[in-house]
Amino acid sequence: MTTTHTPTANITRLEKPAAPKPTAIPKLYRISEVMQQLSVSRATIYRMVAAGKLRLVKVGTQGSRITAESIDALLSPDASQ
Image (cartoon, rainbow, N blue to C red; front, side, top):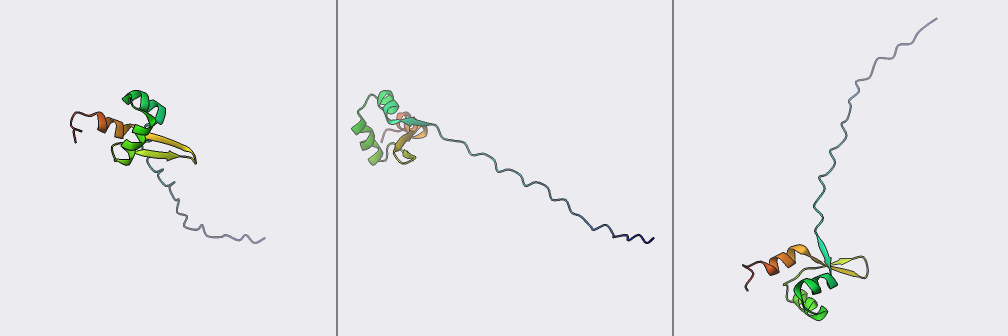
């Protein structure tokens, strides 16, 4: 009876890669919500987007949202440009 002994291979255990830190999801508002917050029309919201005063983000194929950050910047006291 012959026993074959295979030498133990040098096994390196790989640690699971660290999961990437989740990025903060920006708060987004519907156009109608921004209209109410700012007391302006839909057309005025889009004019503000075109002028660079508000930031519009496309959601899906038909949806649009305005970032809370751009609203805050517009309403901040030092935004008198």
